[in-house]
Image (cartoon, rainbow, N blue to C red; front, side, top):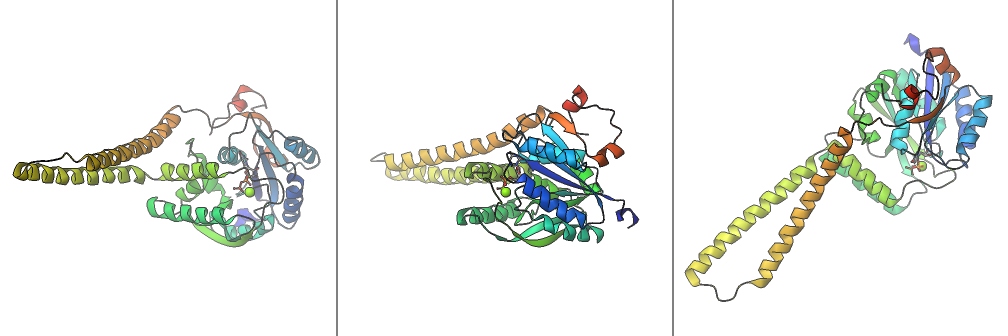
Length: 338
Ligand code: UDP
Ligand code: MG
């Protein structure tokens, strides 16, 4: 393809949240890789409300390297939205999404680009091994992916993070999805287009701590399931039907035996068991419905996904965009998705 020659642009989108220990090393390794690639590049850093020195570090680097762009969000919106903000500003013919903590080796980028040249729209990095992660995290992740494959309509590839390359049209497709509950791995898959996996070894975090805890991961799992499938609602319905049928059969049996033989002692134990069982099922079903109701509530508010405190474009962006919207004007701050 002609447009993928020297003049084509590669955007690297990297969300950062308190990555002061890591970012310089990340930048060094990415720059190294970029110098071996025959493409122009821009590195879009989204500062997701860091409260350490991250932003200053990135600014200092940007003063020396005009390939860097900074989207400073107005607060911490979470990785998924930070990523989206980056995708909205990416001008590249190909866009790489990567974590700053060097768990995604930048050295893999040329391979991703190779598959893009082969005509794939989404090239995702699939990890072979998970070093430096606990056994519990590995096995819960495994169960989660299996569960998603089972109940979701979308087959999210197992053992993939957000590290991937997206073609321009894949990024454009993603930009049309403006839901608030963004389960990115699911959305990446949902848009379709030819997709291809590239295998790699996932490194342990270079420095700093993961921003995820187990509650966070559980929330992400619930997010993933509820934003891609209504199967839990169906399961609740089945539970209801089964218990109703059971209750009907048992009720008929009680009625008949009472009529035929009379009833000596009222069965307190069976009564309490049934009451507790039904109560449990009802509460679970209401909880599941509540999860979906909450999502409907959040989506109907139609709020913008994020606000930008300040946007400092890359050189490449300055060339491609007519910067009619000056930074800090209300239009930019209310950066609604296109
Ligand atoms: N991140 C972010 N906002 C957040 C949490 C994380 O932008 O609220 C960024 C973080 O700086 C890193 C990437 O998302 O570049 C992945 O985060 P982390 O390594 O904590 O997640 P994990 O690799 O454990 O899934
Ligand atoms: Mg990480």
